[in-house]
Length: 336
Length: 49
Image (cartoon, rainbow over all chains, first blue to last red; front, side):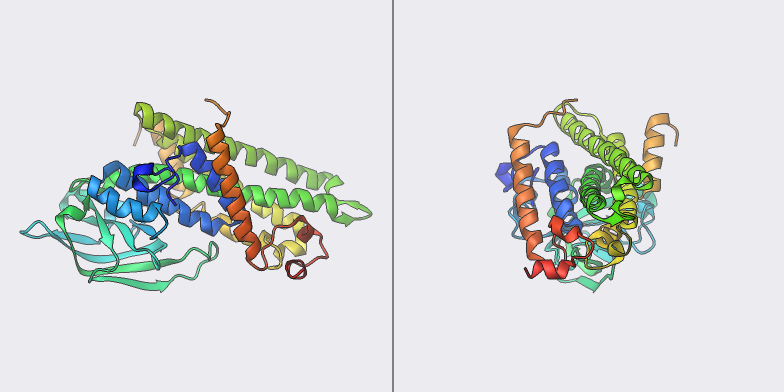
């Protein structure tokens, strides 16, 4: 649960490439479980390690990295997804330095089971993105409520719900980073998160691809394996090209993240390129895999329909494909 | 960019693969055995074998 978390905070102390390799293997078996690992590592631990105090790292990161608790990340709201600055959740500062939090957050991965949550709330509404502050939330404190678990198309083993705050009191030492730094923290954390989602898409796509290669060699039609038909061969070739491209771009993003950890700089373009390519590859490959399997692909007795359902979310969460294209183009052109 | 993996990286990949596949085998109806991809063999009959 803490692959990239240093040993002193209970993690494995590995590098971003190790994280990608492990995530691919987990997603190859089950995409939903890789989602839980991704949120814990990329969205929860990563932000606290970068911006948290020593006490916060010891309290929150250690519990998650050692697998004793589950972490979550709360940015999205019912009316604010990609446009995070439109958030309605409010954190009102009191005279004693504490904050009173009120509002709702939606689509919180691991929300139904998380002990700690990194929450983003508007503390100074007039300042837009610079008015957002990040808080460490303990879900056992008064004022925290969980909504119903969302019924989802895919990744069903990963629980998702809405959460609500009613006069939840956050102490001054539960602010992550500094006041008004929340948007910067969220965007930085999402860069790393996108590498996790790209890895997940690669693992899922690889499972669908391998199942397809095995199937086309075994399934016979008109007296020969269906893999000997050129229409099937074209599908296999297209799937292979997209899978390899996605794998290499995801490893490049992990390598770039490692480089920035050593030498500074950013890796947002590499992360966005990897996430966009891998998630669209996963959607394409699982779609083709299901088509190759025909009726068996449509059956719940085979994992193909699950791969297909699971793939879709990789194009949506932690920045939609549209947002990835925006990030890439803006970084490349310098235009807003 | 170096595409070679270190021993540590390969070791964690191997651990993740083994744990994930072990857990996966325990879950009914989603077994990954190549035998399941025989078009007439249902996953249900394989998992009880």
